[in-house]
Length: 295
View 1 (tube, rainbow, N blue to C red):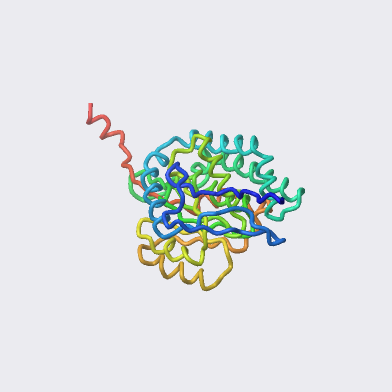
View 2 (tube, rainbow, N blue to C red; view 1 turned 30 degrees about the vertical axis):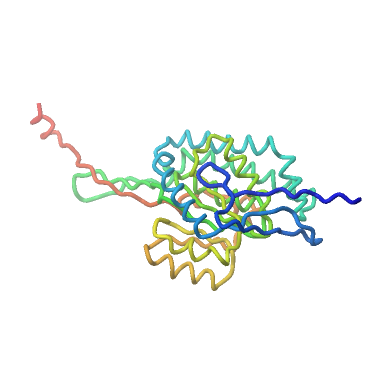
């Protein structure tokens, strides 16, 4: 008798836990030969709302961490990913990558995490400024995290695109809810397992699987989401996001023409600053006369 393979069930990742979708739905992505790869959760609007609640709950603690500590955690993710290299290569090959392309994708993903780990405690110095003003004040402009970022990850890669949009988002102190590739979701859920064992507080990164055509409108119009990242070229979806995002003036970032395999264009500290707000503060300059008067 021919043995029937027991396909793995890939769960979603919300608030540091691995629930099944509340809707009970699933789908079975296939490789280029038409073979089913796994049973994958088909996330619902309720799953997304739960993920936003988890992300909002984690935002205060994550944004308050020192930049150096966030750097340590991103580096730890890279370490854990390196340790599970063989599993990721196997999943990439199952999803129709060649062995060489799979090795290249995992190498780039690890290197990208280390790249952004290095930027965690440096981007503020680069993008902050002391502004000249006419009055007797110091005037400082400093980047601060915008809040919750809803991300629809690149659909043509399983791991590299996902890592490339998550890493700069959390490096800057934001939390995120990410919809993984619909047709290549295996590495995204396994990456959630890496996140779960890498000192990342629950809720900082939340990973959903399912159909972007179903969830995109919820990503764009949720009133507690502060920015939306969309990585595909579909014009109708881009327009929908822009219209829905206007309801609470979300920031909309369209990364629809980026080659994530390009080390020059696929990584940059500008991806960190894209999800930052610039806070400007004024501080009076104490004159010599007033200082003496104070004694």
